[in-house]
Image (cartoon, helix red, strand yellow):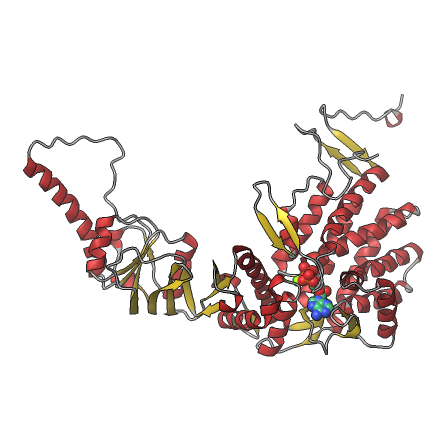
Length: 545
Ligand SMILES: Nc1ncnc2c1ncn2[C@@H]1O[C@H](COP(=O)(O)OP(=O)(O)O)[C@@H](O)[C@H]1O
Ligand SMILES: [Mg+2]
């Protein structure tokens, strides 16, 4: 008996499910497409917003691709891979999340058509890889170099990224703030600029309106001064940064002290008071006039600090302490006895200000000028949250351009151009790979098609007009969603970073090829029945018959 001929036996744990071959592929592709479908309608300035309700009933309103996918709970492994695409896109470049998911979904959907015509997935995968490489070359070729410190160009990039957001009305003002913030923290290294977005602190406080959003050249702490007797404004601040509680330590074991006379009681209390007083005294002795403490501070110590006229903040966040150390040039000290005047940081002004109903502490004119904060305001918590997400996207795209100073015009124009070049390129390839490159070209056109659909336009008419216009050499013809026609996106100043579009190609191709490569899904049994992803069927192998 030959082993090779025997019936394959696979022993799986009870409750495991397995699906193979075409069935597995079909299920995976279906699940991935459902995810892409779920974000499609939010693409572009005319896209719709989504209202997401989590298991606790908290509501988020957003059109941000990553946020949508973060909030929805998907169980299918292929659907999870699509969520990963959005994450990768966001982590790498900060924008283009919806686009990358839609393109990945379309690449899969077109691939399935070929698989159904008996083209092997490996051939499609090879073709897709070739097409992606070519697409990246095309994008590089048509990209327009800009000066990385050109405020006007950067502002347009920021404004494009916010065009599709709820805060789009305020995008001009927000864009100015974002561009200033990024240029403020940018450092020139050789010929290039480096930007660390961690240098930009983003704080939010509901109240007023989005127009109240401000750039602060320094740091903002969402804390108030601990004691009413303390100064609320200190110029030429010498700042002590402490990471230890200013309290009398409690003993670890229950200790018992026998006090047998009123004098002994008084002496005991006096001793405690002296210890607390000396804490304030030690800080004052270093010459500090501001204290930021990461831990708690005893009422008595607060009282003595107030007497010493030291503006004090307690329970500061660890991340804020680190920023403060960097910005003021101070050192975070963990043992009060080690605090010396050399450890103090410097800022021109520390001041408590009333923001809405709350108080916040502003630290301005720091030693290191490379630290800024954006204080986001907005009518309600939801607006503030969405404003924060939009500012995040805008900070990312401006950083992208400062780092790699090349832009493209959007509105689907680069996608049409890439598709056109890919169709030419396909001619040079052998039969089946040619097909794969051709469907890649069709898939990438999903971007202008979706923009048109979301603007209520006829996608077929728009697509054929776009193709024809590009044939005539108009590289930047795209979907003008406001006028409802084909228009020159460069003239409309819809600027996007080259880095974002390149990453879309990379993340979408990677996800699609990864999913296409799978032909066997073995899933361990779960305590509960596998759920179907939102919006339709597509559970684990064989989940929908
Ligand atoms: N004024 C505009 N006209 C047409 N398209 C635009 C305009 N502004 C932005 N876009 C396009 O919208 C798309 C981005 O939409 P968005 O909802 O931000 O999704 P993503 O999460 O992919 O960034 C890009 O293709 C961009 O070119
Ligand atoms: Mg965007």
